[in-house]
Each structure stands twice: as structure tokens, then as C-alpha cells.
Image (tube, rainbow, N blue to C red):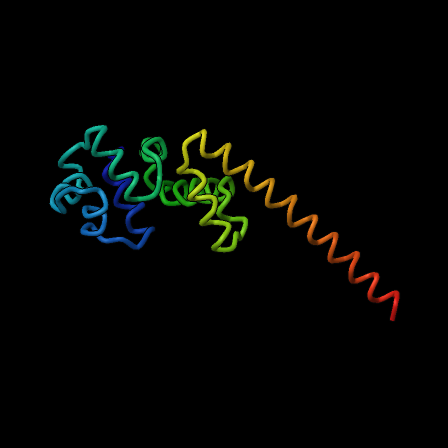
Length: 144
């Protein structure tokens, strides 16, 4: 099976144009076209760029190219579903939480440790304030 055919199917599933893929992969649209038509085989470097542009892994493209031609679309949809189930994004995180996780992932190991310690300190402080607030509310309710 031609890996270009798989790339074309996935591109269409993603509702993307060859121009969009080329732009994302930093390559000429004509190269994307030739790869999809099977006139050119992508190098490892190009395949990595195309996979990233299609939001998948090269291993998925290779595995899909080994499927019978009529099963490729279903195989790619199944892979996408399995990948989404394994990601944290499907947990319906609010935008702030998503942003914190993204920023945290970009920190150095030392800064990650520092951030965690500061977050723990902030949590302890908030918990103490909440406990004091509950105590004060209980006293004011009891005296009324």
C-alpha cells in the first residue's frame, strides 16, 4: 500500500486542503500532491512533518498503509478515537486548567519542583483561611 494514499485519506478526514498540510509541514503543496499520488515517497523527516501536520504519529500512518484499502478510513478513525481516550484533553478541562498544564509541561524539572512546592503552600494557606472562615461563620451563627 502507498503511504501517500493514507495521508490523503487522513487529510480529507481532517477536512484539510493540501495547501494547509503543506503550510503546517513547511513544504511545497506540489510535494504533498506528489506524495498523495504515490509519485514520491516521503523521507523520514518529511513523514514526521506530515504526521505532525495531520496531528498523528508516523507509526499510525505506517500501520494504516498496511491495511486493506477499504479498511483504511475505519482504521484511522479507530486510531483517533483510541488516542483521544488516552489523552487528558477529553476530561473536559476548563481553559485555566488546560493553560496551567500546558505551561507546567514547558517548565524545567527544577522549576516544576518549585512550582509544586509553591502550589502546596498556597493550598495550605487557602485551606487554613477556609477553616478560619467556617469557624467565624459558625460563631456568628451560634450567637444570633
